[in-house]
Amino acid sequence: MAGSGYRDYFKVLGVDRGADADAIKRAFRKLARQYHPDVNPGDKDAEAKFKEVSEAYEVLSDPEKRKRYEQFGQYWNQAGGGAGGVDVDFGRYGNFDDFINDLLGRFGGPGAGGFGGAPGGFAGGGFPGGFAGGGFPRGASRPPVNLDAEATVKVSFAEAFRGAERTLSVNDERVQVRIPAGVKTGSRLRLKGKGNLQPGTGRRGDLYLNLEVQSHPVWRFEGDQLRADLPVALDELALGGTVTVMTPDGEAEVSIPAGTSPGRSLRLKGKGWPLKTGRGDLLLTLTLQWPPQWSETQRSLLERLREERGDDPRRDWLQTARL
Image 1 (tube, rainbow, N blue to C red):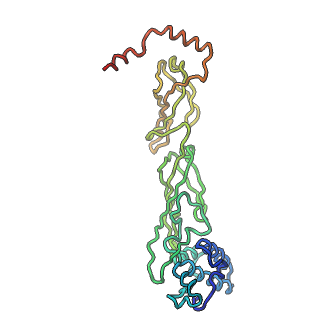
Image 2: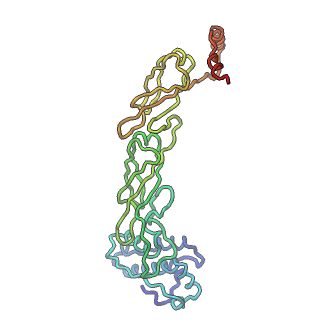
Image 3: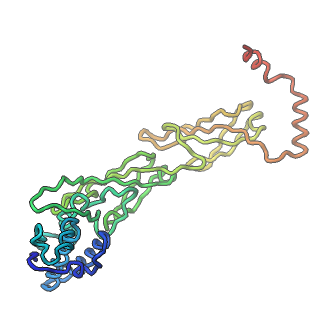
């Protein structure tokens, strides 16, 4: 429908004259879906209405055109250019989303047709990306669209260790994503053909997922090795013994040599983080765990131990430390 006569574009979209850009976008989205020919096959009135709301949006979404429209009213066409019209060949589009991507490309420039660079995640909406004000004059070339998109996905420590299946919502499309075992923060997955859609062409870029592994209260990374602190009692360090520990695979038995000092690490080969070459090692650092409260018997035994101790643990240290 050509922009040859005066129309109250605010009334066409059903918004107040003071409506902001977001309100105009919402109104257009609702009416475009309501009157689109795919929803109303063979209905010429709906098709005409659809072109009318599209023309209204083209004018009101462009700050310059809207300014002239509000300033000159029915003579705005003669005050610097008309709406230009919206001529649509509906047969060239496979579905409504293909059409709307092309239409947003015409009206919204580089902000249309994809994730739009939105930070943090990518929950799908009714329309990919968003409408950007300003538009491009007819005949002007649009800047190239970046078809690749990025998003950050948080995964739990267990999911990162074992691998997981995730269902993500990407622009109204549910996508199954396989997170391989052994990923770390900074790992990057590529979903081919799930990125931004180029308006009017159907070309689509790739989606890159940046993984962020959430911290764990016990396990931590040290390079490719997995580490944890293992609490042990005084008698276990002094006398040694076999203790039950937890690994990412479940419980295991480890031996503590007699006379082990706190801070020493026990290495469990092949029990650590999944790597491309196999499983890494697990390192357990022994930390002395004092009882929350000493019983009389325990205190008596410690007193006896002090009496029986014949060496000075600081003798060599005192000599070495002297300046």
